[in-house]
Image 1 (tube, rainbow, N blue to C red):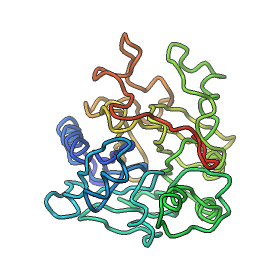
Image 2: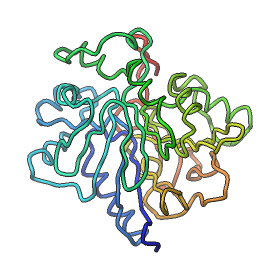
Image 3: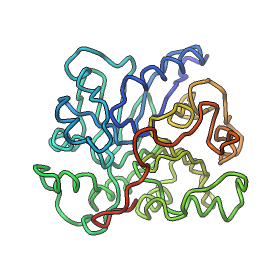
Image 4: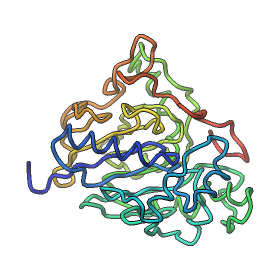
Length: 319
């Protein structure tokens, strides 16, 4: 393989399930016959420092408190993991790290908004989801359930920080860009595949994608796999990858092999099978095939195994 080749894996909403995603990455390495150099997570990681905190705050999903073992040094991730914030995080721990920080050995919070060069790639990021009522309000220290909830919403100055960037290889956001489902409907990209609601996503993230023209966009939040290409006249296409939560690997894991800053090939899941190569078009046809039950991939449903995908909108937040 070329000396500057890089294998990058993206993870959907982990929701505290660190053990299983580590096993999935082991399988991906075995399938591709090489080390995963870099892991990126698109929010709702739920890296709670203390097990009792995690159980108390995430009781609605009865999630395991697995990150505590990594924070206490009982376990260590095998590859560098960088994550953005979603709308379900340990916001008390993240509040004093607006520009990011290391929460455990090789577990890095990127921060609320900005740009980081990782493995030679220019990775832009925006944590949180859109809540119109709070986008212009100051960010308060999360000392209660209400202020912790509001910490999961991005603010105008954070959006502006990302919008001012240039030459972005990969944009990480938690919530989908609005309009990508409607694009698939209008273009009849996959008439045999049931499509999610066209109202999924938010317009702020979409404007960022349209303005930045990142080569790739990775997002989570809606617990559904999706893939679409957003083109602009005279500009390179932005290939959008929407990841399922970490319930099944087929649609919760996505990987790229980069040579320099160019993705040469990519795929879903941990089988190592290539779903896209440079020069090919990107879209819903790259997703794992549907089973007879209408769910993606041989592992069965890509839906939740312990909770709903999208909660109803609250506080003006988009679902």
